[in-house]
Image (cartoon, rainbow over all chains, first blue to last red; front, side, top):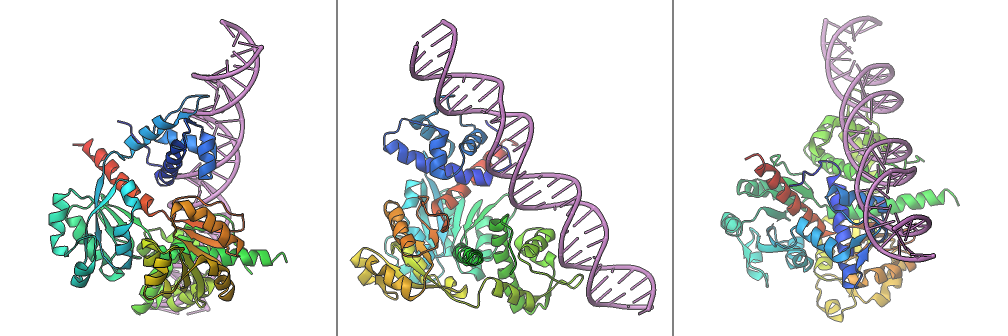
Length: 217
Length: 217
DNA sequence: TGTGTTTTGTGAATTGTTTCACATTAATTC
DNA sequence: GAATTAATGTGAAACAATTCACAAAACACA
């Protein structure tokens, strides 16, 4: 089995997902061979970057011949286990949680939200398509569906508490939509997504760019 | 006016938002003075990193005295214009768009979604709290509310088209929730948020960690 | 007022990431 | 089948971000 380097994993993984998306589109358009510069163009990076990224994940092409689209796609799908569906649970059925529970793109990516949880019995009742469980049934569902990854979309105040529970029940990976940084054991992986930050950083960059430009008027 | 360096802007800005959040909490807990190591602890970085970040944005403390919580908070809020509310529009009222339009945290951060748009008249009718407009009224709203930042939450297929329209109407910053990389003029800032990627990267990291661990059994 | 202590601010060193440069290989052409 | 061309793969170089190390400043206390 290939040993991966520790370095650069985050950025290159992001880009690899991007390349995969491009590849799917190119393949569906009937493109048989792709070259590093095709993917580079689509992903807005340099061709060297594409090849370095592939190299990091042990993906190899043919000198002069580029990459066979289908083979490359297969290789990536095996690498990222797109053949398998991964069961995920979602805790917190507020606005965001509800939207995520219905988000159709997850299915295409092998992400299957098997159950959702909320302490509020009202939310447990009224949500249409998907069953919303009480937190009391977390352990049962986690065990039954071999769940190792959870999405946390609860209010800040309860995020750490929910996190602790989940980790105690065997969860090893968390996507955290609350703005608090969770404390977890070192064997648990956390990915923080802060929607306010994402928007505010654009707002601020725009303001800043305007200021810069007004200097030259 | 301070000239900012081009480098390191993205990461440090993320961290600065984090520090701000911590600061708000510390302040509300009555903490009068904070030191770089307090913020470092909360943000899971080194104290040097905190000071370097502050230094990059021209924020200065007192040697030995740390930072006065209130003053630091004020300084950051002025810097990031938290005194002002920024009007933002949201295009695409599918599941995610609807969730974003109701997301209460934006208000606390000076992000005001003034209007939402969708081509689907059904969505225009049924959405309760917020008026959903036809794209035909984009220009009018953008002008009326001096909007420069937009959130795109439309299906992939129409993302680029919507983007082009928005840019033509004066939008200078875009938060893009679709998985396509948008082509924009160099004066437009785009921030891509791909929820599937965020979840899949955790799934994959968990798989990988498990494999690593099983090597030592 | 002086001495010791604590914390900031920042050049220098280190570490990490991307780009460059080019040897290597495979396809194509003559 | 030799020569030419066009791609990959990857060390080396350049660039960027983080951490180290320590001087400078400010407070505490005698």
